[in-house]
Image (cartoon, protein in one colour):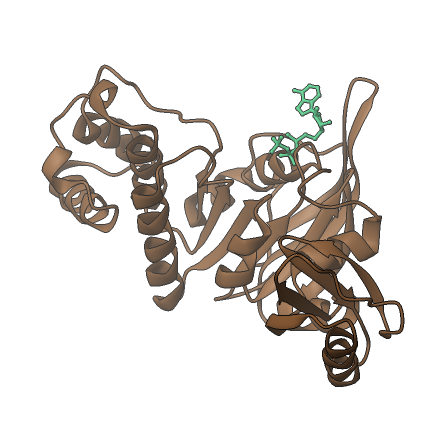
Length: 307
Ligand SMILES: Nc1ncnc2c1ncn2[C@@H]1O[C@H](COP(=O)(O)OP(=O)(O)OP(=O)(O)O)[C@@H](O)[C@H]1O
């Protein structure tokens, strides 16, 4: 199998603080891979090492088979890294910022102008090319940051939490762009603490917590292995059904109750009987499919939202 990225046993400390305790994962060429974890888990540190900005204390990174620590210059040519923090000059226009970044990648003249026009179209900002970035929203600036990382046609794009704090329009635009790039064969490494984003965008996932990978595999495998199925019931009216005899673990959830179970059909039947006996009319009765939230909860004992 061909890998765009092979990360092995990365360790990194900042003074006394160990940020990475031996991170390993592999990204198959052409896939969209999600690096999911709560704030402070070590995602940005990992990505900075992959992009050649930070040196690891130990461990190795290979990008399309090239050793990224030994040959950082070669690797930079095939990687597009979009950092979490905006790295643009606000007084300059989008166009002039892209000239600056393009020249850093060795692009010049007509080739550079052509690429700037293409990437601005990709991020949907052609009509704002000549405006100063100080007039852009945070989401638009993030899109210019992405455009800068695309100029040299990278084969692997590393995106560090690209949707944090941006408007829904820019968020949708970023998702659409990522899908488009991925369809064109570009490999994507996408870090986020929003599990819903991984569920809709990524085929493979590594879940990272406190500087360690705690689960790694295809989304499908992780959900099957660690996800819990449940049944959700909501009744019509104030009376609560007596769910004591229902198999599974029930707890109040939203406007109703959620029952985690290994046997969804039996639990549904039993919930329906319990409601009947308690004289409660069922307003909603449905299966809740396993999510990365339950995977994280089962692995760590905490909710990803609270971690
Ligand atoms: N420059 C630094 N100096 C000291 N500690 C740092 C530094 N950068 C990160 N850390 C610490 O290393 C750990 C991992 O941080 P990192 O930024 O990699 O996590 P993250 O998963 O990207 O989280 P976030 O989304 O909040 O940035 C955290 O405990 C953080 O406080």
